[in-house]
Image (cartoon, rainbow, N blue to C red):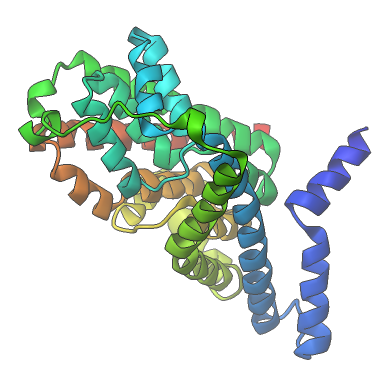
Length: 336
């Protein structure tokens, strides 16, 4: 049974068959040695781009089909029926089935807040939605392994729940811009009127929409990953971000914040960093900083919350990400 699981994992998630085909293309089609810098870069780029888009299409279609049962109005009502820590946990979990980047989740944050949901709940959703989703579990497993993928998702959900809970305890409702509370809220929920064909069409549309939004970031991310993997000396990366460098997690956070990309674009970079002996926690910290604290999303969030609440949100998420990075670095041997 174990051998069957390993085979399925290698062939379906890691797509070893695709890697073998790309090796043949590079060697026989381009006449290059896949072990050389140029050949290795081309192999890394072609293999990762195709693999990511195959997984992305399949996963987003499945997730979006499930999501068709949870339109914003229904999600709001589900969250409204809960209170306390249970509501925060549910909000974080619902955030995992919304394949949105941080900028896309802010309109939902506005809708939830205007509907009267507590800040603790809305911020748990806001943290979870870009940071953790079902697609990230599969993609992380395809690049690293299942233990790393599940640990990342679990720790991301914990950060979302604790971050939202802390913000709720601070009673900062007055730090939300007034227009947010005045935004119109629709009670319409046409879930029962959606046919199977409409759900499938919605899922296909989501695949096209998300692929259109992320394709450039995927290409850039894979390109950077290929450069790191094949052209930047390991000694240089180790000197800056090596596992023995206490500042590596802090540097990864600072580098990640100004960037803007989905997790799909950051995964190839994290993969290349780990292969260059960068600590697992450092690579994951970079991913989390890009997806949860990107500068464009913070600019958008600034339009709906006041500076004090924005500073508290950034501070809590940054501290959580850094702590998670150090924890992963200290326990990386458990995930081998």
